[in-house]
Length: 201
Length: 250
Image 1 (tube, rainbow over the protein chains, first blue to last red):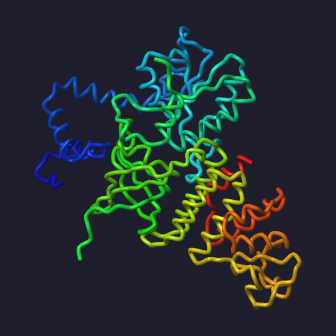
Image 2 (image 1 turned 45 degrees about the vertical axis):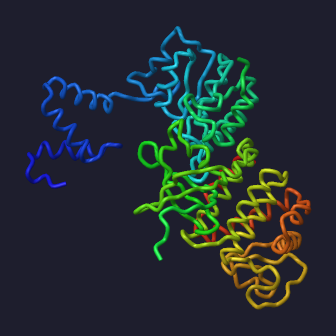
Image 3 (image 1 turned 180 degrees about the vertical axis):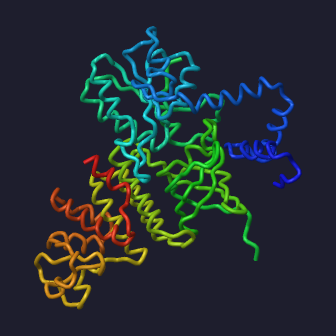
């Protein structure tokens, strides 16, 4: 885009927005002009929010979730069930699980998933740390919530193999049909899992 | 003649990379177009119609629309999802190794229907057979054959002399076995036992059902794996990354 006719700060912000995922040149322009007209406090709040996620954030020393102190909000909450650990690939996966309000245990973030063809093995993930947590003896259930695709399944099966000798119950999130889907378009793997995991009404 | 705007093809999905918010670039292996890259839109959404039909290690029927850059998959239906491979960590890892191997050894848009059949058959064997190492070796050996790197096992690759029934040497750089007289010319040649040579010779000629009849002990299996691995990494000029994962599972 030609920015020669625009003031330099505006052009710069448009360019920065444009670098974000899912934002094209037009949306970038719209966001920029929206902020230009918004009250100063709004723009400042946005700027501060952006800066604060890059400053003073670190990984929780227990579950490796992203946090602003040594322990994350979930690990330091006494009311949560500390006998259960739910294993997720990324910190972002905790949010949708929390939104369900069905789970009150703890989490463990692996920060990735085993991907043989990219050379990502178990040593690149927070697996050793997980085993240390499990050996403490407090945990009686591990819920594997890696994504239901090939790499996620490989990681889940590998973890299951590692955890089995520790005598801890290992469960996997149910795999089946998503709400609002259509049987016609479902693939064989999904449908067979849905059949295997069918439940009494 | 103008080529049609949409075309149908069978394909095995051999690689996926994320593209933007919810899309993926898939690498496909097809009978009519060889290796091919195409976009599958929205596959990260839970209600995606393509979703499970374009997972790795899946044999699907696809409808593809020609795009300006990459083609776009518009419809997909599974032919074989190889669910028994996906349910077992060892089988799945071997399957992923096969996919990586075929991806690294082939170039895009070179038709090779034999290779496609080999891939589909090997995946079928892997989902049934208990001898999954035999499936891998058989796949490697014939894959090399179909891309023009068939190892010379019948006679000395250097002088053409017939091989004596002893431990000879296998040279990855020459692409075959060296006889006693020639074995000194190549520093990196590794010994190949008589049994290993016999097994490889037979596998090169027979179909899979005959190949799987041979019982192979752990030691021989290890040797065969090493020979093939050295030859393949010499040819690719790199290690196949999945091999370290396969070693870890042993």
